[in-house]
Length: 121
Image (cartoon, rainbow, N blue to C red; front, side, top):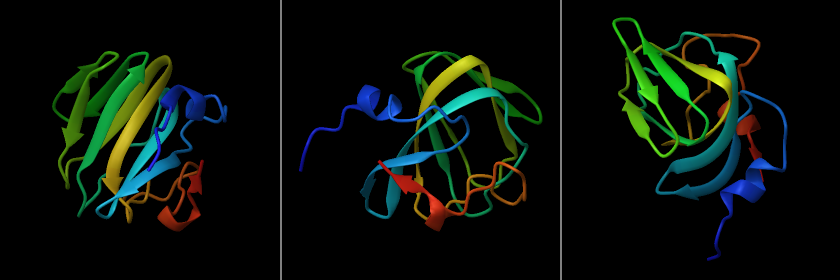
């Protein structure tokens, strides 16, 4: 058991849209990721996702509305809901989701990273 410094972890990498695993509990990964610009529309059929904005501003776009998130705010996207994160500038985000989650859900895209290929930092 040890303290995890999220700022230090975020300084370890520069890539955007590439989640890094910083913890694991009860079948869930805790990940940090940098967002910039628009991501791909996608759905996770079997998993909910939690997005917590650590720095910056993120809009979670849904087909019928937008959930704006400022620093320190989070939202949970329920399984089966199509969504697309959009960052205005660069944003740092903590994700909390099951270990099986594929980052682009049901979509194959240039940003797709299989759950088994995620890096632990």
